[in-house]
Image (cartoon, rainbow, N blue to C red):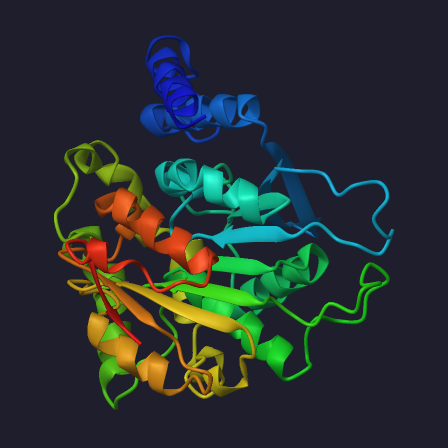
Length: 349
């Protein structure tokens, strides 16, 4: 499956470069071509695109059924779902190598995979307006999670923030909202895997320092933000650099960033989470520094093992895809990543 899907993605990207759409609403040839190639590959791999609308706002989902619930099972049963929420400006495309390598584990543990795709970010809704405020993003993500009823949520960066916020809301009994689609009395996810999450800082001044990074990017452009995305920037990033630069300067994105306030933070909410939590962190992350990890761990009453990926920055799915896939696979079995992997990671329980 891994080799076949990888070959398919590469073939589609090659086709896109030669025959793919080079114009359209995005008017960004490379990004449009990659989207076209990735869409073809995802579709042929069994994923289905779902668009959820609320007024003018949109939220995209890529869904794939891994196994069907037997017809003899109670009608109240829901698929056991694995949900992935990408970070700020990111897309499910960046996580495809990790998802491919995790495929055997996902097939053995879950009935369905669901990957979020946010409007205005780098994914398939890149030409749409992003959510204008953090309040609206939180509301719509939580509404969507209420209907999906995920067993496990993997969230990266902003996605980790959103996952933790939802887990805390469920722990307090505020979520899920009362729904006709909740016959089995779903009370929240059983497992959260938070990769380089934001939203909790642990010490006075860290929140202001984090905010200053984004204020600087707004004022002076993406070049000020660029060194914080990776520990070692991949060679291909220069080809999409313009897209990232344009993203950080867009009016709708700037409005979203400026809408975030202390009430959205999860620092004082982590104690409400009842799900099993795993923390995955790049030990050289300078956007969401690794020094935040103990602050997260200390505020989670049930404990949260920290898996620190060695020589990795803020984007483990790109910088260390094999190690990321291996570590998360262990977490899905609720096992501490194996000691033989200490070349890749260090574990703090």
